[in-house]
Amino acid sequence: MEKRMKAWVLQGGFGTSHLRPVELPVPEPKRGQVLVRVRAASVNYRDLMVIDGKFDPSLAMPLVPLSDGAGEVVAAGEEARRLRVGDRVATLFQQKWLGGRPTPRTTIESALGHPRPGVLAEYIVLDEDGLVVLPPSLTYDEGSTLPIAAVTAWQALQVDAPVRPGDTVLVLGTGGVAVFAVQLARASGARVIVASSSDEKLARARELGATDLINYRSTPDWDARALELTGGVGVDLVVDIAGGDLRRSVRALRNGGQVSLVGLLAGASAALDVVPMLVKRARVQGISVGSRDMFEDMLRAVAHHRIRPVIHRVYPFEAAPEAIEAQRRGEHVGKLVISIP
Image (cartoon, one colour):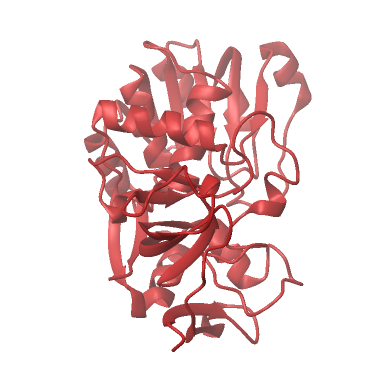
């Protein structure tokens, strides 16, 4: 008798209202693949864009959404030797980017949640190379928060612009990537300035290690405030979550500093003045998550520094659309997780 599983699919149109709970056959692992019993999934802004049709208006449906999950290996196909049954694992967002320089084939074409099926299901089958083993210190809920948010923050802070003790990092926002950036920067010995529109969120950021806080609603010239906090020198790195207007991020930099652009909350285009970039010898680096090598390096740092991912709320599997709508509202600090018991 065919084994069945529960899943959510996007079907019949775009928007959260077109998410449907369905039953599907439990997939079987083929050569080099493993079957994972998914225990938790987390929500990213990218998932919202996919579901709303803003990422790809012509995507093929039905589609199982969400890219970030964690669970247990319960079966293995032939020649699957890297992982074993019983391993606790998390998904690699870009399944083919194992290391080295990224290419369209290893990144865009191999991403989970679109174009490849996502993880909002009781079981998934993946190539064993597209998974990482979780450290014992992390729960499944915590592990599910890592693939996009934590790896993006890691690449921004430790790969493209390695942060050293004594550096100053300015983090814009308090969502998933931003919170991991705060935690990882503090673990690296950096001074961390956080800018947010909410005093409540800023208070939470201080609890997580932020050393200086800026409310950019009450202080619209937050770049000038960042310069003031650094004695006019500027910050070493800006982790810019929103995009839209990069001019203030560049103005907040020291000479030779970098803006790591990791999101597009403010839209798909950005304002940027060339002269200040030239004067400051500033760099603007786009960050697109990271490779499996980066993921595994990040996991070692998380385990060593005993970093615990910040989870704002855990939703039951049947309330998955509620979690996705909560992502849309943007009221959370850290990550939103869907538990799959």
